Length: 250
Image (cartoon, rainbow, N blue to C red; front, side, top):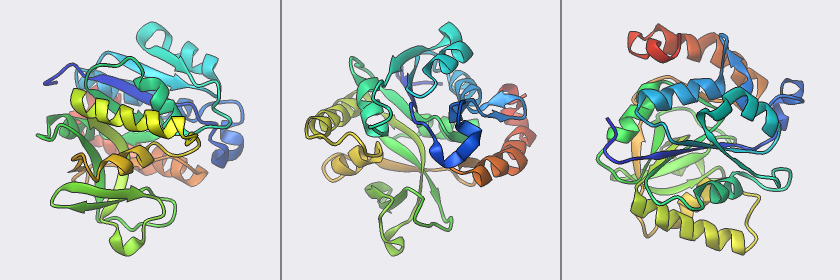
């Protein structure tokens, strides 16, 4: 199922203030969907796709995440989570890694076949994109030309946007090296309080990153209480209703 020994990096350091009291004392990735946490859902999707070497970059409520996952994963602590963002967590997570990686945000609920499609795609370096959805200022927008990602940012003009970044990405061993060099430069320049896709944007002008469509499979990024309600009431039930996904959704 996996053509090279991917390592997974899950970015879970943030404090998730936009969810208000829901995450005052609990990290977003430990919020539950029908009895299973978001993080558990992700770990099971990774296992289904043959990925067992997993590192979770923690920060806020580090101990709670460690207690939840136990020895099933490795951990890297972003002790500066209050003043940094996912670009810094990714830089921490990729240090010492010398192979292909799957990178995902810890707040994404997705059908496991989205990850399967990404891994099986012929592109060595690619990110999942949801095409055709109505986009606003909050979404991480992606511009695609001939299957290549040519721009990615939240501030992109809507007229230029072709879809939304899902937050599940793969890089080959060679691509990881390119990405890490860019992260090293950005962090050394003091760019630590930015989203990880900034690094993807910086390299896509000279290094091919391709778009892999979700093809209508259900997913959601959870940022606000209404996102969590939608995940619980609509998205996760759709995933569970698919016989092909039941083995890891219960």
